[in-house]
Length: 336
Ligand SMILES: NC(=O)c1ccc[n+]([C@@H]2O[C@H](COP(=O)([O-])OP(=O)(O)OC[C@H]3O[C@@H](n4cnc5c(N)ncnc54)[C@H](O)[C@@H]3O)[C@@H](O)[C@H]2O)c1
Image (cartoon, rainbow, N blue to C red; front, side):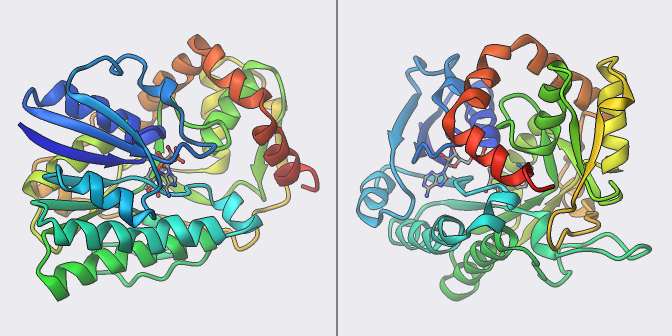
């Protein structure tokens, strides 16, 4: 039996990865290590919580003593734990620096002392910065040039992970994925804001003129890529994970409204995000060479996501009605 530590396993992508590992490998034991911040939600894992190969530990990856205690039993580490929302990082980035930068060091240091077989750092395309029109998609050797507090903190974690591979010969691999969409995404992120607002016939806030371009990846495709890189990736290397689903804000909002048969009049253009990165685009050939390919195109990913939010109103209404969400939404959108 192999033991895999999934940090941040109660969040959006981490919870899908926990489920993916339990369903894919009968000989893997999963430790979900999560602080349960506002974004952590054990309801994301109700279907696996009684699995005898699953275990939950509540804790902060920055807590060296607790991390070390758990790490004794671990063969593989996948680090999903992070503050993940750019707009919140613009309001204040202290937690981002602690969890996405400093605590990655804590986790790496413990994993090194316990000789783990593999450490996978879940990074993001945002570490590359922003592309100008006509520039080629980023490859893994493109320079890291992050431009907002979230991506700067993530780039720190990414580079610290690289440094452990170079300095200590530690078996580290890194994935850099584009915008994920799918079930269980906290409804502060763009796609679930659009879908849940559309269900309630509320306006759908599009930043600026809606021209910022993102690539989109269905969350289970991302989990399959992480699994592959963890087991087959070359030590010390980074792997881009892109869905080949580039779209700007206008495309995204219009596709969602069309899929949900809601009127375009619900679109509301609001003041742009400060320092908004205008374009992300990934060359994912290196990950594809390992044998990975996204299974979902943009339309099917959006449709599946919209169907899930429509069928699981209890999950997101509880969050949207909560004090944390209300305070965030008011603060982020009130002057836009
Ligand atoms: N969502 C995306 O589109 C996307 C794309 C590329 C990469 N990523 C990366 O994937 C990872 C997961 O993203 P997500 O969208 O699932 O985020 P999320 O916000 O939904 O989940 C983050 C989880 O981490 C936990 N957490 C936060 N700080 C912690 C700490 N100090 N110790 C332990 N647990 C902590 C939270 O409780 C939560 O369960 C992040 O590292 C993010 O940077 C996300």
